[in-house]
Image (cartoon, rainbow, N blue to C red; front, top):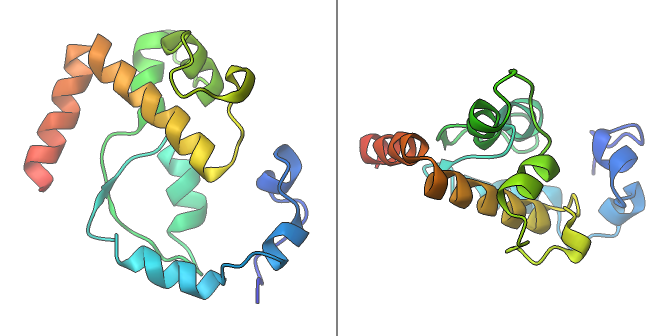
Length: 146
């Protein structure tokens, strides 16, 4: 039913998610994979696209291969870390969103899909508000791919 589950996966080691949560989920993995196909013609981005899409969503059982707008992590690193290092989403959020607009508990990312998406969405919003060249890059991508 869940052949790819391994207790050593990043999600199980770094979040409150446990293997049992997956086995007791009301969502069947094949149903979720089928539902993703509905969105495959969409345009997506993520904070660290290589991690989310390159290690997980592009492979079974998901096989999700949408068009990807510029990576939020790369955009954040280009303006917030000129030394070339990658910033964790939490660090980018802290620097761009000190007012905690996502209303994260204690201002901390929860490492769950919805919490991460909201946090990373705010990172992107603040990037395109503060940096016109980033806004232009995203708008150009959308214009060319819609």
